[in-house]
Length: 293
Image (tube, rainbow, N blue to C red; front, side):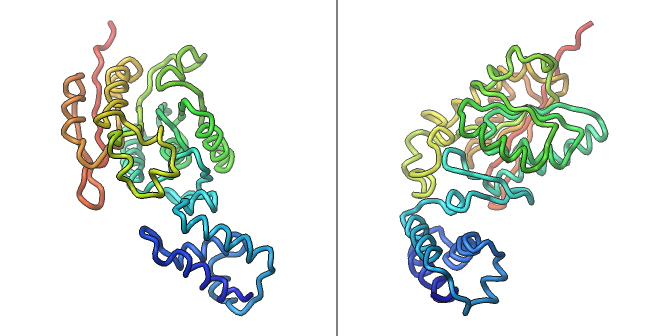
């Protein structure tokens, strides 16, 4: 079968599925199976494809038709200009999270240019936040924590992929992951997290790709979606340095509640950043510690 014919078969399989870009997805998948780039697919449409690849391509497109995320099929997702390895068991990086990372890169340049600092990422997942900061700002030593094995495995794969020696990953439940680790008793200049923030009862209302295939534990923020913020915010004060930054990704309607929680715990300079749709996406605040005599 020719590339053009096979591509059309793939497009036809998913053309009626919501939240898809059939031509792009079929092209990405076929280019990966043939180990060529997308341009090759467009310019070699009459080339024959061997039977084993035809069969594999159609099998994978059938999975996509059922809602299985493309990123898990091709095992990658671009984020901040980097190609992250992903697999089932980690949340797929979203472009919305780039708002948080871009803020951090700018913040580090303004406040800590050429100064060695430390960042802690709670719930590292694939490593999208932590590894992007570590890749683009070599003056930052990054510590990442996750309670689950798969995210730590995937983040370590990405750490090696990007050749990062300024990243250290630990297993544990939020701050418990760094308790007692030799060499990191000092405080952090930045604590970042994209915790689970979907209210439990709302998860089943999400699109199929998310609710049926992405890890529920990375989505479920408890009854009101705020469970992890309630745990992290008060505990973070022990681990932040004076004028340390605490920054979260949040749900589209959680900005005011998070502002109030941060204020109640004594944080200053609180900001809520909007996404491209004008919805709440990131909240941040600075903690001023009483300096020791």
